[in-house]
Length: 131
Image (cartoon, rainbow, N blue to C red; front, side, top):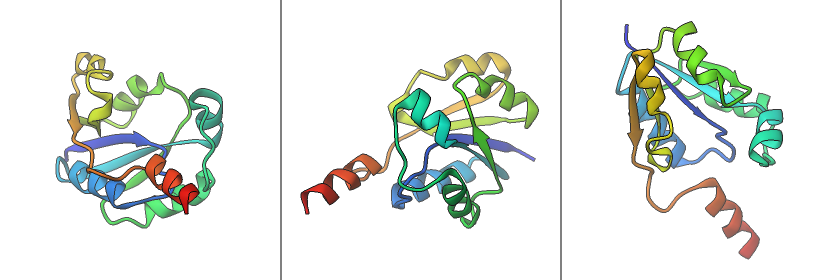
């Protein structure tokens, strides 16, 4: 079984997120999503989420491409996650290009997927302010 992992906040879930999850799942048999906790988002990313961790987790668990949701609590856990969950492929958006190449040293394929054009949570939030 080929295992794939991706990471993210997945707040205000939209079709760009679904595209990422679908394309990630196509790279393997089992998709794990490491979902940023509220504390990690606030303390490390200075991001406040609209939906709580539990709400975002419930949304992700309802998507057919997602097999397991785990908490992302810090930047450093990626290296341990790939071993603990026997990951073959690490997937993330290409806005992170090159940032996770160190995982190749752990025997993991690293794939940067092109983002879905014209959609992001930031754009949605800005558009809502303008209305």
